[in-house]
Amino acid sequence: MTRLRFAVLGTGAIVRKAHLPALRADSRVDVAVLMGRDIDRTNALAREFAIPTVAQSLDEVFSDGRIDAVVVALPNFLHRQAADAAIQAGVHILMEKPLAASIFDARAMVASAREAGISFAVNLPQRFRPSMIQMKEAIANRAIGSIESIEIRLVRRSGIPGYGTWFTRRALSGGGVLADLGPHVIDLALWLAGDPSAEVETSHIWGSHGSRGKGLGDWTASQVVSEPALQFDVEDRARFSLTAASGALINGEVAWAYAGADENRVSVVGSHGGFDYFPEAQDAEWPLVFVDSSLHATRLPVKADHADLTPAWMRCTADFVDGIVTNRPADGQAALSVEELIRQLYAQHPAFADR
Image (cartoon, rainbow, N blue to C red; front, side, top):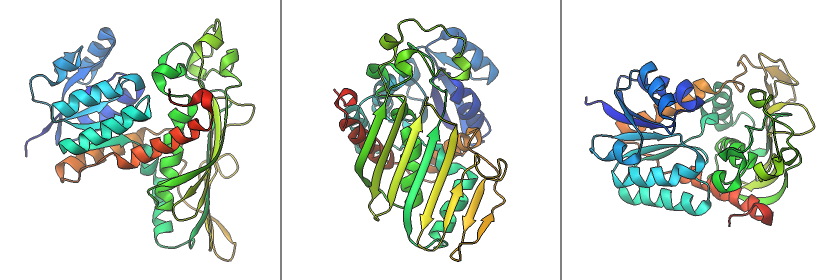
């Protein structure tokens, strides 16, 4: 079998921890090109992973027609540009979430890839966590009857990813924590529910901490923040309610920073049972609990897997390769449906709506 020639665009933590290790470990893949915005960092990473070619532009990546697939892990505002170049070159795409900095770009990317017959996947790793897979299989086997409600909370007391970078500027990122963590929550909820879509009910969005220079994550805690309101024009907390096509109620909350405790909870309640992944309240190592139809609770032997998503990221990358090799193309539609919901949530708050 001819090995797939991959290009990787981006040199951030997810590339180093997940994408490159997953691709390098796959006998079906050659990582042929690495492109990054910082040439010194790109060269160092290329040496570490024995990547033969370093590129500084999209033209350099795609001009020779020898790339089969690309991982796009660039800042959000560069997603559309990278996708357009890959589609024009006939190259399959694994895109980091969110799809793009605007819904208009997201729609255009997915439509263009579909028209060109290109596999377009989005890296949404929550589906690849062992705890969530066990929950999904049990739901599919009717272990809890019909789903009545799903609640997912990914909240941090202090986790804002820096100031003055593209993460905290709406024109470059497309949004704050809802754009960043919202895809994780909504995609996971719809996948567990087995629904392709949902209707937006209510939403609340806050920017209480970032605009005051508060709530920085550990890796930027020593950073001096001057004029934070000029560097932070996105939200740092959001809550929302959706109704899935099946009628299940979905409640979600995401926060980069808020006046509360860290929480990583996935709760699914059905007509005959339920699951609760809640490490802060349950056993920190074995946090998944099943409640049966008699309301008896059983702790399941599934280890906590929320803190380090590296294994799930790697499985997501491997699944993208599997899809190409087995002619099981992704069309980006599920990710686009999630993006549409997020933009509808923003639209309820004019200050955060797409311009």
